[in-house]
Length: 177
Image 1: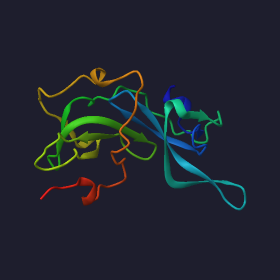
Image 2: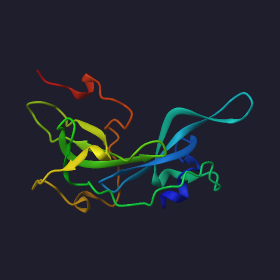
Image 3: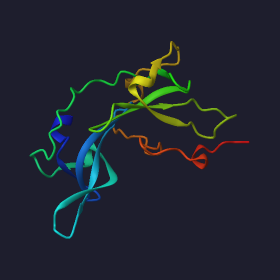
């Protein structure tokens, strides 16, 4: 499915039957694509409203409800994520890790998920950060991998990684003394 066929349209999750206005895409290095939708709610006048709660619908579960776009925002050309599988560093904080996800919506620049390497000394599980594209620089590292080497026939995402706009709490980082 191409993103221009879905973005700006009312979509439904075939499993939960929840509906929303598709505002963006979430791509994982592992080959999974999810669509991000603002949850549709009905008000007393039976008009559509959209909550701040987002639905994240995987491609196989996605159903297009309205084929006429509710929003026509002039979508960008679809492109292959340029940082996937590369070791990247945040130009501002120096945070470093492998790029494993990309998020785009109508309201923001592309953001990439950078996941740190596992460290027994610092974290029980690797932390991840979402960074705007302009903050990322690729480091020259032999640890880079080809995204195709981690893709499988039955693809999934990383739902345990907080999505953009949601900040990690100290409890989620599980810092060790």
